[in-house]
Length: 396
View 1 (tube, one colour):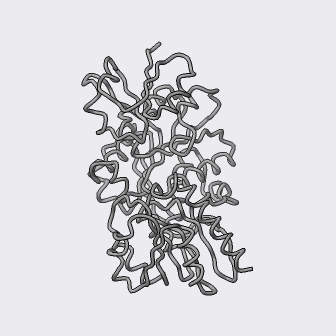
View 2 (cartoon, helix red, strand yellow; view 1 turned 135 degrees about the vertical axis):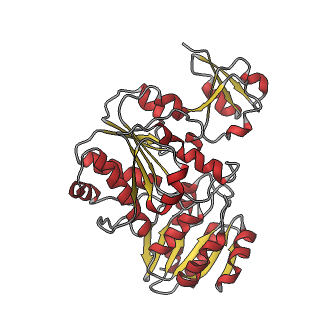
View 3 (tube, rainbow, N blue to C red; view 1 turned 90 degrees about the vertical axis):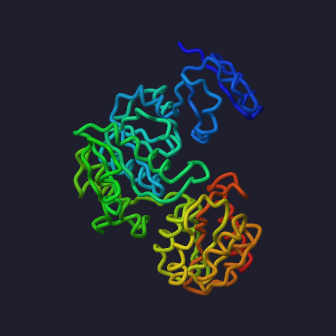
């Protein structure tokens, strides 16, 4: 029954929206008059709240699509957030629950918006959501029954005004939990979170134990992801054996430590989803072979010098591409490794592959956003895979 107005900067997209009935559409740069009379403003997750607040009437409430849709969900909701590993863990939980007979809707930041579920046929027993800080920052009453924080490190400092703002966004959903609901946290952050998080939910902390095995999920970071998945599934009545059976046959997700090929005993790994320093660290720790590391792109913040010990231990060569050349070169000059730079990912891959020896690994783990050269991390990963195929064909 509301009067709906859609504001879209891109005239081409606005033209497509205008074909739908029931709302008015305005194209072009947002102005204060566009928001006149608004009582509720639902923002795209990619629009920082701070960029709109001066345009929106003081009496209007600014919320995310996640918040709006959650008002109409009656099924139990699981929300998984964190700097890294959200999609892997969410997908793993879905497989475990479905293999144990649960009907699950999976969406949120992982793909299908929650509002699409609300508007469709309600057939799920459990609503499983990957949620980002962008969504949570504008979701003040979002109330899952199980909320999980996988990890936390510097990220999105090109969007959030500070690390505190970024963390507060991640933690906001825990405030809604009741005593019979579950709050899941990494043991490594316990000291900080005990005082920082305000929740009535039952707190459970996880760390990697090695009790679960999955060949598609290598490394210590994935042991932690599996433990978090176990605690979530345990809330819905599953025991350890059922969880392990549910993990069996799990296939690694595209561009997340994805095996591309092995040629003349050189392994090529696509970890294009690595957009943070922590995800690069996890990727390096997961490799047992000497690494030729491809990195570069739009840097989102953090301390690159954290990587120096692993560069010295694991890496034979560093091959930069795209933006952030000076940042990486300056931070890693003490690593004692040769650092090269190419304008394109393909040229960097060719250089790395030509230096790789048998038993080495060529690893794309950029620790950056992709927007200097590519539309998204998927496009970057596919470009890497094409370049690998081109290299291999050229050697045959």
